[in-house]
Length: 98
Image (tube, rainbow, N blue to C red):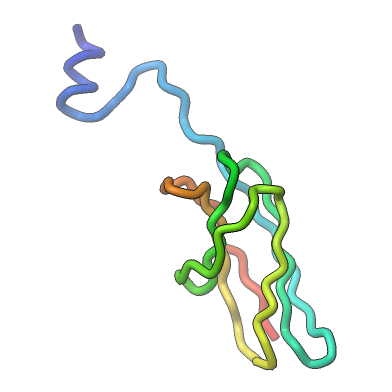
């Protein structure tokens, strides 16, 4: 009875598992003056993962745990996160600076 009340009125599922946390690592470097960021992650679910740079979706990529973002001939700091596509399950942010 309590489980039904909590589910109906509060959206709480007792005994429901929490989404797995996504871990993200980034490495920034320049190749012939072009800024690039290598992203590696683990823990995303589904066939694809969404990669965000500075809170803007830049690509939905196969969820194989890695992506290289070719940013261009720029300087600055860029903040990344990776989310399981179609969910709010995301990594903590990670940044690279050039």
